[in-house]
Length: 326
Image 1 (cartoon, helix red, strand yellow):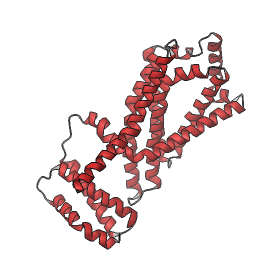
Image 2 (cartoon, one colour):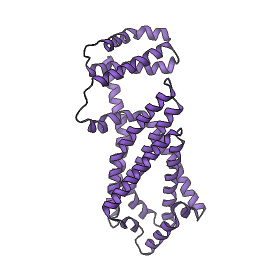
Image 3 (cartoon, one colour):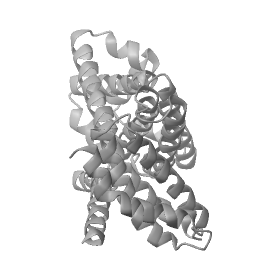
Image 4 (cartoon, helix red, strand yellow):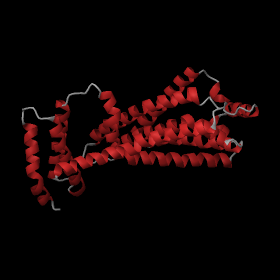
């Protein structure tokens, strides 16, 4: 569609919306939100087909003013903490599925690289995990308790220590996104290579299944949300590299805000992972079926919250917009 025809077709709605924004009387935030969705759709269309046009500048300004009006008038719910996790964050996270996929693929590639390096060079595992850890684990294997390392500390001490360390790693992955995302990818690489060499070490000892069924009780959530935190860093990096129609500074600030929300979303999961590692993983005598159930439920929870639920909310939102247009 030509720009002139696009403007002619929609300008009455834009003017009606602009009039509502300029009206000093109270405007229902919910009604304004519906109009806002329509304008942002038009803004996206204009960004694609009419870049650097006056139409794009007009719609961008209109959408920005609408956003300010909505959130200035909207009363904060007493349940904001709950709705952040159940509605606000997952609804927004759909936009960052590409960064999540990239973080996941990079992680998988470097896990494979760590495993391959460990298989090719006998000294590689020691250089990554350290002589002290390897010697201790070999001693535990000789004593028929290869996972004894998870029983060395008290439950609460391990729970708190592991949780704090995991949150620290997540924050590093997020903050290092300021280096155009490359710092985040470096954190991903470090953790992935360590995991790959770690798992190969137990494979070489004939204990791959023993390590998998024990470590992934807590590792399923722990590793998954480290990847999610890396997604946050990549969102920051994208804000720096690809500002779109915004200034680079504005795009960077928006990326930081979005990335911070992603990191905040990981904190409850890190607490659950820390609890599992501190109190459950040490139960190495538990039957395989119970370990498999815990691992499966953990994976299902992560996939639901960070993949399927955001997709569901996005589709529901689109249906609401379509119904409004009809």
